[in-house]
Image (cartoon, rainbow, N blue to C red; front, side, top):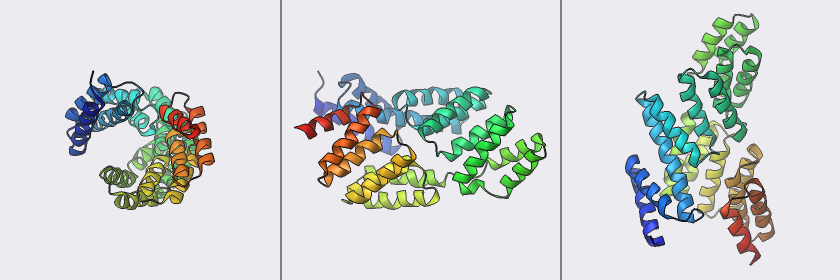
Length: 301
């Protein structure tokens, strides 16, 4: 029987490898924790999360070297571990589309958008793929909504797309859409990544600054709002943290993590009734959520 101390040691080693970019080594450590730890234990939950993160990063590396099939395998494993992360579904849709399975890719993007209805890049990509298969009206609706959410899409090229489409020149419109898809809306990802790295190292104030930079580019990402709230809690700014979790829930009302974190923020401020309400809400969203159940149990003791 592996002790909790040993499991924590393996998890810590996996996290060290992960931060160093030694992804294969990190994966081996996290998977060893998953094999030995009780399924509902905190160690297993953390290892499960990071196993998904490692697979996602391995998929990115595969895409960079054009290893599409390997990327698809890693993304499938990442989604198995973390099925409610919209970016994983977006990345998988990209890989599927590159393989020519456009309808399947559109369906995967629909999953991403169900998880985060404000995900502008997924919405634009869905529109682009719909245009490719000839569903022009629905495609333009998606692209228009994406431009409304993400101002960097709303440039002259976007107007040219609409002009060509309205003239019935679908070939030119598609060419312009493909060109517009090259617009860089990923600066946000850089700051988001920096924020997470700083948070994990304990630099909460630095994490706050990075998440604020990410949100200045686009304020409609619930994941960034949630991490921003965690960083603010790390700084002891619990009321501000609660506001960020609530912003995340306005964007995605089914965000279980942000719901629990809102409860934690309330608890830190002595608002036990409000905290209990958030934990109960999280349990309704995810009846198998161990953390919500445990926090409710603690609250009742």
